[in-house]
Every structure is written in C-alpha cells, then in structure tokens.
Image (tube, rainbow, N blue to C red; front, side, top):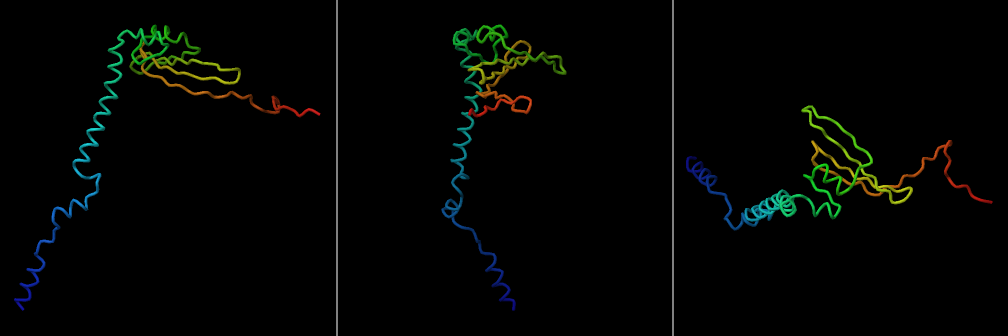
Length: 156
C-alpha cells in the first residue's frame, strides 16, 4: 500500500506546464508585449501632438494677425482680436463664477436665407477666448397651429 501512495504522489507532482512556443500561440495578438508597447507609444505621440500642435500654430502667429486676416478665431485671442476677426455678436450672455471670474457667451447668427440660420458660439473668460462651437444649418419653420395656419391651401 505504501508503494501505491508513493506512485500516485509522484504522478501528481509532475510539472504540467506547456513549453514557451505553446504559450506564444495561446497569447492573443493584442496582449503581446511588443504590440502593446507600439499601441501605447502611438497613443502617447497622438496625445502629445494634440497638446503641442496648437502651441506650434500660436508660435507661428503670436499676435494672431494671420488668423484675423483670414477671419478665423483661435483659443487665446483677446476680446478685441475676436471683434477684429468676426465683428460683433448678435447676443452676449454674461455670467460670473463663484470665484468672481467673468464669463461671456457670444452668439453669432449667419442667415443664409429667410428660413435658414447658422449659429456660432464663442466662450470668453476674463476677456480671453477659451472655446467655441458651431451649429450647422437648421431651418426655422413656422409653427402650424390653428391660430397660425401656414399650410398652403389647394386652389380650385
């Protein structure tokens, strides 16, 4: 009986691991170390360019004169530079933060025709442009209610 027990313990204590080529075949491609390093390096370069590219553009045109001449605005412009580039907005909404910073929302309306308008929004903080966005063309259709029937009537 003692020999049977020794035989079973010896059988269970054998190493049950695969060789290294078998492990490489089982590891998914995306989880391999060189592939992950290339992905992380690419993401790092992309993020670096996202931060550095606007700074390079600003270094080429530090006082934004080229942007103003092309009627473009860029983050970092002063209120006066934005006015030179785009002119005055139709609406200015002013708020103050808890810290006492003055924030302004400038709304520009570009009418394509009597029913279609495009909106441009700029956000300024303490007289400096901090961001903005553009709302594409949207038609303003008259509201059809019984008191305002704008539906064409067929002619007889």
